[in-house]
Length: 139
Image 1 (tube, rainbow, N blue to C red):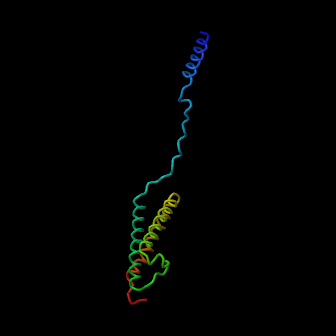
Image 2: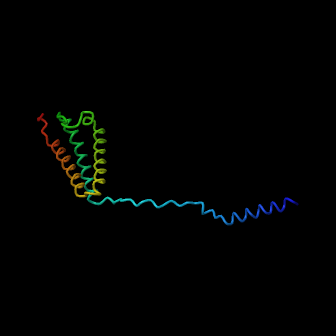
Image 3: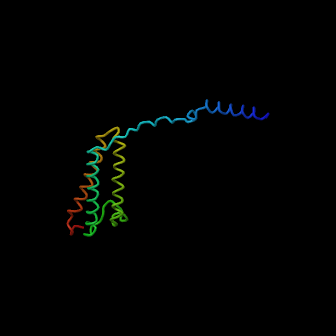
């Protein structure tokens, strides 16, 4: 019987402690993450990327056609220009890099970003049209 008051006292302290300590007080909430400066991709950006990718695709086709006619590539090494899948992967990487650079530059200078992407598409289109209009006898 001597243990009963001791067990009752420990049990009452335990009940009092559990009732006063709320389990939610041990949970710490994390602060809100900072809001990003994400801008959605607009119509101008999508159209410029489509033009750039189309010019690159035309450049792949025209380079392959030009090499079949017996001419040679002026800028790219043979390891890239003589293999169509490698040149497609190279061009896809360049378009992705153009998109990344445009997104970074667009935050501060949106017109300059659009100008750079448009000029890249124009120069790719120029070389692609040049490759397609070469005469087979011109070497």
